[in-house]
Structures are given as structure tokens and as C-alpha cells.
Length: 93
Image (cartoon, rainbow, N blue to C red; front, side):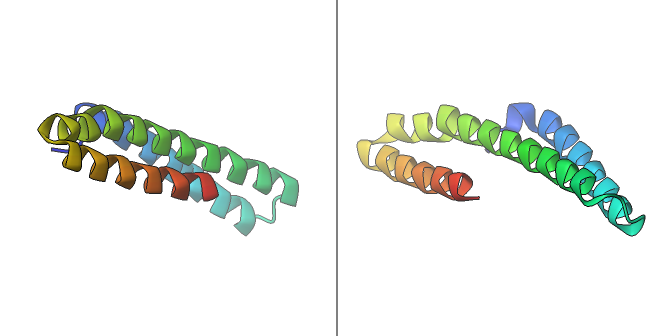
């Protein structure tokens, strides 16, 4: 079971909203909207995706990592390392 299972519908709603924003950006480009306005919308989508990512990290830590740590120190450490790598990828993006 995924750590986000309890909030799956919330994530899906947010992702659908982001999907709509991305379609809006494509429409803006198609309509030759002023560059800065397009960039502003890209920034908003980026922040929205980052917010989803942070929520998923929090869910992962609170569910997957905690359960693995309860199972064994080794499993817990593996999940912590996995989470750290995922966080590093989010920070670099």
C-alpha cells in the first residue's frame, strides 16, 4: 500500500488542476501571449508540482519509512536512504 493511499483523491484533484494549467500554458503559447506572462504561469505550475512532491515525501516518510523502521533497522535505513535520494532529486529540479 502506498503512503499516499489515504489522500490519493486529493493528489489526483491537484494533479488534474496542474494538468489544466499546463494546457492553459500551451494555449497561451499558441496565442502568442507575452513571454513574461507565460513564464509566470510556468512558475506557478512548477510550484504546484513541488507542493505535490513535498506532500508525497511527507506521506512516504510518515508511512513507508516508519513502517520499514518498525520492521527492522536495516529496512528502515534502506527507506531513509531511498527518501534522501528522492529529496535530493526534488531539490535539484
